[in-house]
Image (cartoon, rainbow, N blue to C red; front, side, top):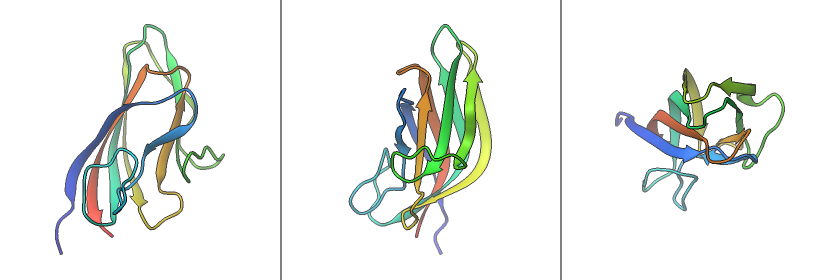
Length: 126
């Protein structure tokens, strides 16, 4: 059995309307995935979000279906606040698999183009 590989997802902006940030890559694509040739899963280990703005901004992240923001599926929720010119780091263990329904990391920020998310993950074959 081959070992999982470490990958870096992003960096991408969190929009001010709920949208997909990441999904596991599949044979036909994915949301911001590294290139692969088979169905895969991610094990998210570290989420880092940087606020580039001069004022505090808030965000919420979900593990949900595509474009979802379902209450109860927040992984970092309740409009978490990041101070101006600061960073937020969360160490976690979250699995996203191409064979699941809730396989997307979705998110929303209080302002567009100011919060940048990057995720360190392991990638493996389903």
